[in-house]
Image (cartoon, rainbow, N blue to C red; front, side, top):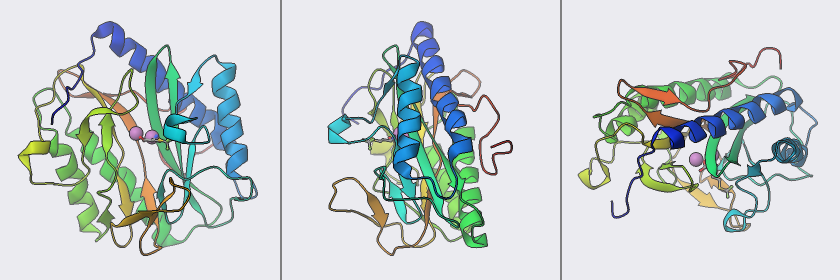
Length: 266
Ligand code: MF3
Ligand code: CO
Ligand code: CO
């Protein structure tokens, strides 16, 4: 794994805590607005304005040319959906909202799924299993554990249900830089070149994308929107994590305790 994995000291970890917490706060803030009839561009604007009003930066805006402040990925969209005034949420949709903020130079990266109105049992199960898979990956993390344990744990959960795990996008180290080493695979690559021992102070995301059907993805002509090759549903959750001596710390914990739908009070 050519490049170097940064280990954060306590001052840097504290900045990561503040950034992660703010990403989750933005998510909690926008949650009550996410319902049928609202456009994904309105969701983008609510997040953008809240972030900027607090003096912080929406990391995706102009990142490698991305045109908006958050990603909104609906149904067969796997990730990197672009907010759009013409795309109104409708009954039965499932949407991933991915929010990344820069606070005092450090990134917090977090995503959750939203169920719009009455969704199918199939969709709800996919969302539940994806959350369970992310948490199974997170729970393997501690100083001295293997990076590859994360993907193995996620794969074990997804496989039980016959789902496809996306391999084209992965989790990532994060800090002053949005995407840094290591690459966090969400499946068992069975290749020691992708592996390493985790150390206290490493910070990275775990963000599995899980498909009902094929794991394959393709990117639309807009250069960003990644969709499933078979048009079937995809779901994703994401937390930013720090490695501690005894385990892990979830830096993007919801201040309101809203980790997976239904978000009561929303
Ligand atoms: N937040 C995404 C991630 O989890 C990255 C979005 S990059 C963008 O890594 F340019 F599409 F915004
Ligand atoms: Co990420
Ligand atoms: Co993200």
